[in-house]
Image (cartoon, rainbow over all chains, first blue to last red; front, side, top):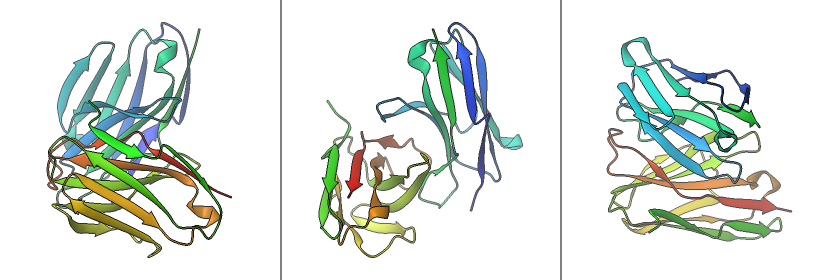
Amino acid sequence: GIQVEQSPPDLILQEGANSTLRCNFSDSVNNLQWFHQNPWGQLINLFYIPSGTKQNGRLSATTVATERYSLLYISSSQTTDSGVYFCAVEQPNDYKLSFGAGTTVTVRA
Amino acid sequence: DTAVSQTPKYLVTQMGNDKSIKCEQNLGHDTMYWYKQDSKKFLKIMFSYNNKELIINETVPNRFSPKSPDKAHLNLHINSLELGDSAVYFCASSQDETGTYEQYFGPGTRLTVT
């Protein structure tokens, strides 16, 4: 099956800092999503981004499908950004998302 | 309006019991899924259903039996619960099974088997 690798595994930030999370995948995909799992366990959809660049407030994401990676940018981080960020991909005719192991982000006040 | 809902949110039960988790989506989607998140937070597919038909059973023990009475509902029944079944179970849905649409996740059901 497809391999999904996220880096770094853990990230500690001071409030107000910027950061970049990376997701590498081993094969072509037709779906790529970024999720934020908050401390209460909810999985929140951040971006549906199989290719291109999107922005939503302080968050933005870029997927370069031909090079099999995606980046999630967090700017001016806030304590509410803490949690685990997951990248998940789906291949054609696979009928499921395959998740990376996640990046645990801790934002300190 | 909750797009994908699950009940119960928490479930604590003893080994050997049988339990069910219910999932409903009001998005009009054709495809629904069950995912399991283990204690290390790793998320893995269990089942995929499209228009009430099973399209993926990802090597899940047959103690787990999904049932889809209609396109909007996908329930998960677990027989003879074991300690290793303790996890968070997420239901999700998408417009269809092609993988070209976003998946939306429910709030999760935390199952604890004692």
